[in-house]
Amino acid sequence: MSTMETRHRLPAAERRESILAAASVVFGERGYAGATTDQIATAAGISQAYVVRTFGSKEALFVEVARRAVGRIAAAFRSAIEADDGRPVDRRLGEAYLDLIADRGILLSLLHLFSLGSDPAIGPVGREGFLTVYRLVRDEAGLSPEEASHFLAEGMLINTVLALHLHESEDPDALELVTQACGGDLSRFRALAAG
Amino acid sequence: MSTMETRHRLPAAERRESILAAASVVFGERGYAGATTDQIATAAGISQAYVVRTFGSKEALFVEVARRAVGRIAAAFRSAIEADDGRPVDRRLGEAYLDLIADRGILLSLLHLFSLGSDPAIGPVGREGFLTVYRLVRDEAGLSPEEASHFLAEGMLINTVLALHLHESEDPDALELVTQACGGDLSRFRALAAG
DNA sequence: TTGACATGTTATCAGTCGATTACTACTCTT
DNA sequence: AAGAGTAGTAATCGACTGATAACATGTCAA
Image (cartoon, rainbow over all chains, first blue to last red; front, side, top):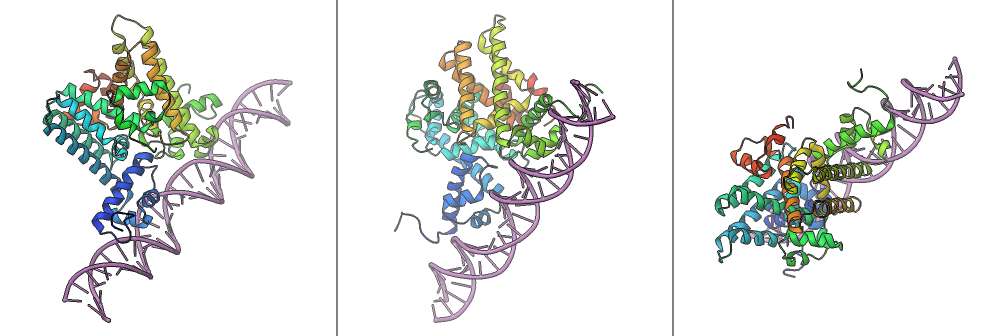
């Protein structure tokens, strides 16, 4: 077995990544406080104790997940900025953001991160991450403060729609709203099968 | 003592309201899973057991808080729609929303509600609440789907900025972003003293 | 005044969770 | 083949939490 089922004894670096991936999904679905290290361990196919010991604490794991998520967004945006195909940069950024939906956990973990600003340990990470993205779309993409703010607002709406599973709703108003939120391009939402 | 400190033995209806008010604050700060019924009880000045018994369960209390919050938003929007002072309706709606910031708990509790779409009991409440607001600004205020979507997006950005305490940050970029998010009217954010 | 109902508390329980410890087993080098 | 370092688990613990039950106290009608 090569790529299948990733059996016994991964090197530590790979195991870390697989835990981070599992944690991203679970934190995204349940939030920081709502998720348990045991759920993450089960999703990663290892024991609860190993999850905690690998990252020291649940909090440290969440912070790492959040930092990775911000990093993924930043990388995607920089690629979109670089790949100038003639379309306006905000269109390219929007498409890059919609591509990130494929990994639901990223966007949803960030949504939870941003709602924990009052937490003494997690709050600063959230503020730093949010401002990082703001500065990126303003300074590197060259959007005006107003454009950058609008762009972030649309992104937050997408996150919310995704978190609420409105894209799976049969309500025609939900469909209309989701369609607006993603600028008419529903393909990324449709690609999401299981909830 | 008449209005002060509201001592011993409130009628049940008033006690319910005071618990709901306290719960709105605590849920807003910590989220559904992160808040404890004991924190809510302390904030309301009563025992933990009484909080639970009054609403049956923590979940039922949260749902009630969320429904009230949606109701408050709907009422504020309907007032704004009705009070036509010549300005465009979306301006009036925006101002009405900013007025709601005065009660941080409302907006932050909703932010947490909207992030719990995967929860079997809470998810449906969130979807229903979100769509209720969408339909209101579309049908009663007469906004187009696109305008309504933009309006909700700006609202979600305001919620996020509020949750992250970016309005208390000394970072100039944070100030710039908050200013954009509230359309240049920082007065409601400034009015928020304690965090 | 009395007693019945409404308001509210103390005590406690059973379950859950993150964390720690001690242990096992695999793998690779020499 | 030995043995040292790495990967991983089982067992368990103390703290916390939501919920329940039994009890106490205030209030009001008759």
